[in-house]
Structures are given as structure tokens and as C-alpha cells.
Image (cartoon, rainbow, N blue to C red):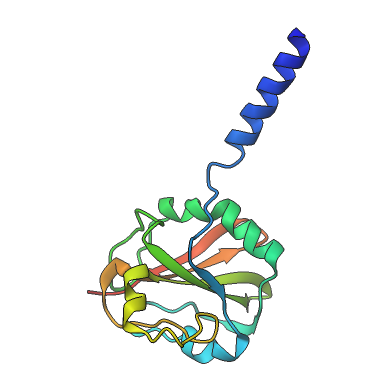
Length: 160
């Protein structure tokens, strides 16, 4: 009985500590690849360079992003325009597009506050309509997630 208790305790500890960066957004969409020109447009934030192709991330790749999503909260950017970090994921909705840069598969994340959706017609589908905004500070940002390294390698926050 004591061994069973120890085994269950260790299993619980490992499962709870293995998920410290997990975050599943309430609102998220995988973008259609036809939106690449619009979604990769940067009005008042830095743009990721050297994007050579786009593709749709699989559910497995999105799950990997979600398992590591909270790592973005520790990422500090020194790129142009806005604040230098994100402090809370709960207020955002997300759009994802797979991109290839320097032969690496990455997920491009377009993030915007959920309150922004009121400015877009409900008839617009989130996977077909990039939500783009100039200025707005940290209400709008973009990031790149490296699927191989399982970490963020780029963060750009809109200017004010």
C-alpha cells in the first residue's frame, strides 16, 4: 500500500509540474494559407524576416505550442515600437500560421485582445480574416514559436 501511495504521489507531481507553461486559448484559429500577405503585414511593429513559405499547422503542432505557450510571458523583446513583454494571455485571441524561415518550421502567432473582435463583422471567419491593427500597444502583438526548440524566438508588440 505504501508503494502504491508513493507511486501515485510521484505520478501526480510529475504530471502537474510537466505542465507549467501550458495554456489553451479560448479563441484561436489556424489561418488559411491564402492570408499570408495580410497576416504577415506589419504596420506598427517589427516583422519577422526571411519567411520563405507558409503552411497550415497540424493539431499536433498546435498542441505543442499550447504546451509551451506561457513561455512567451518570460520573453523580453528589444524590437521596435511597443512595450517589451506580454504579462497575461487570458485577454487575447490568436491566429496561427505555419511559416518556414531559414529552413525551420515555426508557428507565427498574431495576437489581439478579444475586445477587438467587436470591430469586425461576425460574418468574417477568424481563419480567413487576419485581425490587423496599427498602433494599440500591447493589445496587439506577433510572435514566432520554434517547433524544434519548443520556445519562442521572436516577439513584436505594436507601437502606441
